[in-house]
Length: 259
Image (cartoon, rainbow, N blue to C red):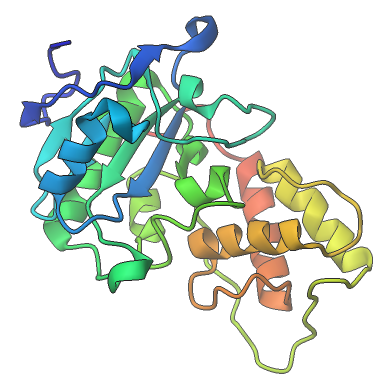
């Protein structure tokens, strides 16, 4: 399948094999950021194009900022897998997926280069504007699949993206040693409050009042995105305060992210 690039920023098109129609003629309202977890963009593109990979994405952004489109934006790519956000479990039908070249945590996890981040911002703004996405619909793979994924990780500069209308952001509350910490097996009002706010923001979590393994993974995902200074999957005052401010900020979020 050959096609014309949707974005003028794409330097080339390499069609992926794993592509299909969006279920129910859904329109993309979410933009999901991934990292490739591979040693080079060339290897990632080659793998993502193959039918046996059982995965695909709409765009790949190389270290130097070069953008390759692999799936038309109107089509469903296989990038999010088992996932959830704000009541929706078919994230692939409702999203556009960007794979950002980075070998990932298992292979040194280097910083994202300046040229690459500039390309992420430019492409993200282009997509969000054309599809009239809400800014808080720009998410990490780890946000929609916290049980399985940790990408693009704590080094990804979400604060900078938010300054360009890509993603919600609030300044994280300071981490203070000695504050009370909640962990697996504990129960209490603070745990229930955090679960309720995480669920209200969009994460897949049940308000039980008990800290279980699933809550730890959701908290880790939240910290990877919004409190990257310390990613431990525990509930402390810093995490709870940051979450509270984020939920309040989301209530004031305009309907579209980029003017």
